[in-house]
Length: 65
Image (cartoon, rainbow, N blue to C red; front, side, top):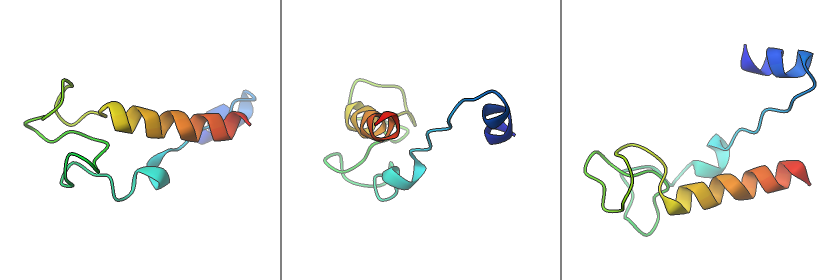
């Protein structure tokens, strides 16, 4: 639905799921992009950490060109 609405309105969906594979909350703190239920970084549980936001930014920058 989001992709359809974006397409109808001239917007682009930037999906960073593929880039985040292998960086899940179960990985070590040096690899993960999402913090587990008990975070080791200053972020909300089960939300992107600093590395995750940097990864998302790289995907967005690539989409922008």
